[in-house]
Length: 393
Image 1 (cartoon, rainbow, N blue to C red):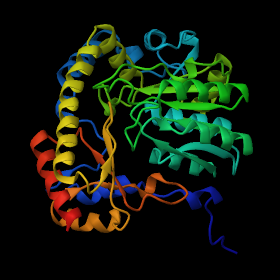
Image 2: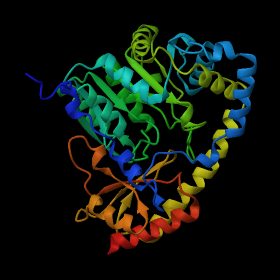
Image 3: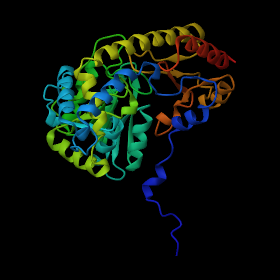
Image 4: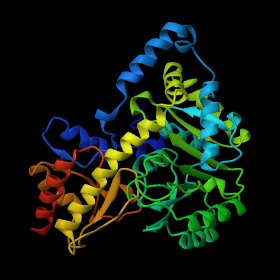
């Protein structure tokens, strides 16, 4: 007899990203897009990448085009370890680093390492959609903790931990996706200590760390307490180019070795050529000027969006005020629905992301996410004005 459903049970929770489907639908249209999480491609250092590619293929092609070590290109691992020590992860050495295909793979490997079916995961709510999709693949359940202007409400998180011990805690400490908020230092310290005391694995996703426009950098959560089960992730996608697919994670050698085994099963190793391109880009001192260029432009676009929101929606809606990153979370009056509004916005040439996908246990019907880095300043001003008119109507 034919099996009517030959797919694994976990596939019942695997669906397409609502964001990617929206971008696919609007790709050919003439829209002002606040929907994507994409960096501005006009800022990609294409000429430098072309130069490095040619040099590497001329001088090191046999290695750059060959299979490589599962844990990554040794010089790049050493560079990342030094960078993380500067951030405050004092113990970071090359043995703590695993090079991944973007930070998304780091999330997937960590989830696969720690999660059994129906394992509870402590998350901020709302939280990063692609992380939820990853956890759904392993049939996780969720322990959602609300956020406010200082990030995850750690008092609530500790109460939740005391009731149900999570198998994993997932946190975006800096300029969180989708809200843009930053976890305060005091809350970082308390959360780090609570997780370490209970030996709860921490997955700290710091993908937006370098996109800071105001304020001072804060230490990673994993640097504030000795948690042997902490995994810290980062990426070069937001600060060089996402198409290179270069990310990394930092963990104890014991955890890192197990993650490396999983990566070897998955894809053998990350792209040998891309690893060398990224290393040379960083080693030649090009990374920090690239970050400064992006932050100057992105910071101005953030200001334009916040000013436009204040001009057109003050007293009508509320929104977050991110110090960095890519996103503003806009909360409409509770009588409005962001999904219903989207169809009217698209008719007017505006695209954004309704926030319901970021709430795994429901909610967010009157909330939407706005990206401020992809569109130029004039388009941001015009787009917010049109969106505000639709909201007021």
